[in-house]
Image (cartoon, rainbow, N blue to C red; front, side):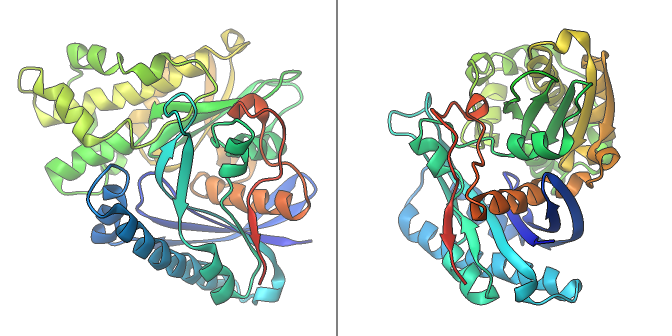
Length: 370
């Protein structure tokens, strides 16, 4: 069976996830995985490109090439770990690193920009690479995101039970898979991005380990009320978001208008903010009032406090991780881009128009032959 390799660095920009998968029709088996961390300095350079600044084109061009090398190194490290050569791999699917996402409804000239030069990936690995996966959907009038619901539908849907696959990365997103209905998917707002930024600012840690710091704080209802007024949350679907809208400067602007709060209480409130925005979007899905199953993937699976608050907000849903469906939650996103590469190489559509708002199904990405 053909093997595909998926590469992604997400909103948190903490490193590269690489997943090796065996695709057999609509089945997808995770064969191996590898994580290549970014240094704090590199993470900061990426985050700086997510908002306007000086000399952006020069910095983006240099980082595009640098990340191309790092994506290639991650792919080669995974192959070495699994004792495989490049000829064993049908193609690499590389999402790259998003540095700016301006979808329809947020910009008069919509675009989405991912860096990590696929020419370098193909050249260094000797493996055909599929990349630039968002912009064809945008050319067809779509948001260019989220793209993973097509994968979730293919490998996680049940013919009898409504399932929500919820990725809690930097940004939260939902794939709603209900029997007899067209799949839905959209970004819900912040997942971990505000939590990570706040703990980095106050504890100099990349994340709140096990959600312990936030769990010890006290919810601040007034702050939560203001956070929930963010205009993104009221936008109709299809919609997608990113660090452009939910970031530390925005949070600090909100806090500047309020009495000084204990940082730990702010963290506790941010946990509730993420949980409520995910749950509110989930419960608005057609048929969700009947309950179902939710399967969590992404970094949020390592925050028990966040999962507890999400379960409390959606009591009609049983909560699991995607491990119960056969794929470790840390590698679902990378596996999805391996699967999308398989769709492209087979000349099959990779988007779901009901999710992205595109006018039609399209074959995604550009192909960079080995």
